[in-house]
Length: 331
Image (tube, rainbow, N blue to C red; front, side):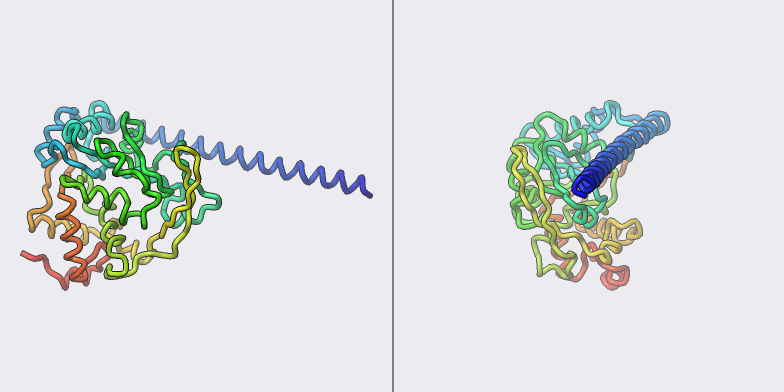
C-alpha cells in the first residue's frame, strides 16, 4: 500500500511539473508571437509611410518645433503620434534629436513610458503576481517612447503602471521617488515636479487634446475638492527598482462609467473641441503643423490654472454634452 501511494504521489508530482513546464512554454510562445506580429505590423506601417506619406527631415522638424514655440531651456512633456508626423527620415531617433536640439542642454524632455500588460489600469491591477521591474520591462506606449528609453542620458521613474522617462539637466529631479508620491499624478510625481519648473510646456505632436495625462494632475492635486469622484478602489501593486528592492505602490483604476465619457474616448470629439477652443480663445494654446501632423503647445501653468477654473464652474474632462451646452465658450 505504501509503495502504491508513493508511486501515485510520484506520478502526480510529475504531472504537476509537466503542466507547469507546458504552461510556461505556451506563455513564452505567446510572447514571441506577439513580438513577431508587432514587428511585422510596424514594418508594414513603415513601408506604407515611406511610400505614401510626406517625407520630413530632422532639420525641418526642428524648424517647425521652434515655430510652434518650443524654445531653448524649455521643459517639454510630450504626447505624440509618430505616424501622424509622416515619414521621418531617421525614424523616432530623429524626432528625439530634433526635440533635444530645440530645448538645448538647459532644457528637459519627458515622455510617458507606461507599462500596462493588462491593457488598462484596472486589468493590470487584476493580474495575479504582477510586478513591474525597472531593469527589464519596456513600455506599451509605442516606438517613440521605446526609442527614447534607449537614448543616452534618459532616466526613468519607478512606478508599477505610469513610469515616466526624462532627458535633460533636471531628469533626476523629475523622475526620482515617483513610487513614493502620494498618488500617480499628484504631489511628488513627475507631473507635479514638471509643472513646478519655470519653462514647463505640454506638447502634442500629431494628436488631439484627448490623450493627455496632464489632465489628471488636477484630479490628484484637488483630491476631494475635484467636482466628482473618478476612482475605483485602491490596489497595492509591486515594482522593483534598479537595485532589486521591491516596493508596494498604491494605484487607483478609474471609474468605468466616467472613463466611457472622458475626453480621450473616441466618441468625445465635442469635449476635445470644447477644451481646444476654450484654451485657444484665451490665447493659451499655440497650434501649428509639425511634419504632416497638426500639433499644439501650451504652458503648463496656464493649462493647469484654466483647467482648475473650468472645474470650479463644473466643467471637467468628464463633462457630458449637456453640461457643455449649458456652458457656452467664453469670448
